[in-house]
Every structure is written in structure tokens, then in C-alpha cells.
Image 1 (cartoon, rainbow, N blue to C red):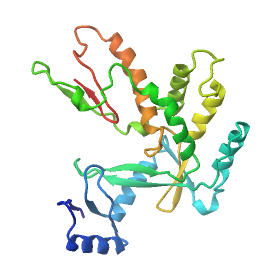
Image 2 (cartoon, one colour):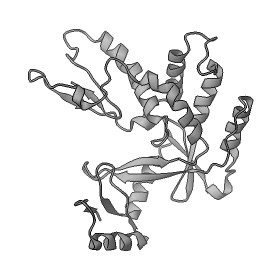
Image 3 (cartoon, helix red, strand yellow):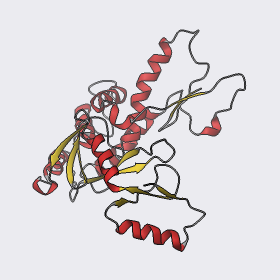
Image 4 (spheres, rainbow, N blue to C red):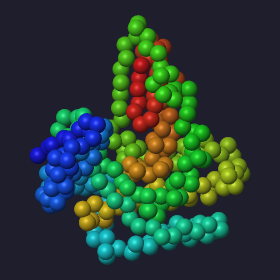
Length: 269
């Protein structure tokens, strides 16, 4: 069952009554849409089945089991042990929470997996590292906003999107790309971190992310969680590493006259 309530500009009392009653029904889920404003009422069983179908991919996730039987301090302690060598200490974390946002603009209303990780053990560490990576996200193909692109009537515009980018690119390879760009030599320092230290920090911040979905604990084993502060930076940097050599090797008779992108969507003009 799908019922979309659009903002018009505000919900009516009847709309709120519908949402309150739906939220009390254990057979229904009431998420916000992936794009736009409003609310969507879905069959909870179908939502759980679709999310489990995604999370049961053994190449992307590993099911750990009942979160109550798992040592909640294990990932936090691992980070703290390393940070203590740098005279830093981060405590007081919890697991991230996975949810699915319905893509109401696509046929079949598929779900986009989103991880709420604000109080997770890796969140503050990831957020701390964002400014170090930000300078690497821009290259000559990057658009700061759509206004910087002026349409040419003599060109045909084609638009491409990378499917499930955050969970499909190899995080370990992205870390190597980042380190090679930041450190011209093994003796270089970035914000007082050497190459080995920053590699450990990046690995701790994005790898083996643990989260709960429907009462079960999972661990992400590939890509980066959609919700990590470092997710957009990693994705853009990795795509930069692919497009720059690819366009450079492209034969002149098949090379696009203009190529631009912006995050999180990638556009070819």
C-alpha cells in the first residue's frame, strides 16, 4: 500500500491524523521520501523484505546477529587505542541505525538505504577528517552549481548516474588514492599526521561499519555507508581517479565536447 501526502504547503489536521494512526499500526511504515517533501505510507513487511534483500548481499554486508549479544565497546575501543597514541580520546558511542527511504520518483518505489550514524563510534572521527579530504574533491570537470553550466543548442546532453555508488566502490582503493594525492613522499606530513597514521585513521573511520536494522546487527564490508560524513568525499575522489585518465585516453573522434559532474550525481554533456 502506497499513500503519498504532499506538502501543500502544510499538512491538514486530517493528514496528521492519518499519519498518527499509520505510525501506530505495526504493519505499516511511514518514512519520508528519498527526494522532495511529504510522507509515504508503506507496508512494513514489504519494506523489511526489500531492505533485507539488500543487506543479505554477502559481498557488501555481513550479518552479525543480535546486537544485545555483541560487545558494543569493541569498535570504540579499537579507535580509542589508536587515538591514545595521538593523545586523543573519543568515547560514548552507539550503533548506527539503518533505514530505507522510498524513491517515489522511480518505478516500483525502491528504497535507498540511509545510515543514521551521528552517535556511532566512527562518526566524529569521520567528521574530523572531512576538511583534510575536501581539497581533493575538485578537478577541472567539477561544477560548483548548475548555474555555471550554459546549455549549447548545438550539443546533445546525456545524463548518467552511478547506481548505489557509496556501497559499490572499493573503500580500500579509495584510501590508497587519497594517500597518494595527499603525500608526495613517505616523509610528508598532513596536519601533523604521517602517511601511516592517516591511513589508520581513514580505515578506522569508514571500514567495517556496524549498524542495526530491524533488531539485527550488520556490518558493512564494502564501500562506505550512506550517512558517513566521509561518504561524499570518498565517492567524488574515487570517481575523479576514474574519469581523469579515461577522458585523457579517449580518442578525439569519440571524446565528449564537454564533460562535467557534480556530487552526488554525475553528468556527461
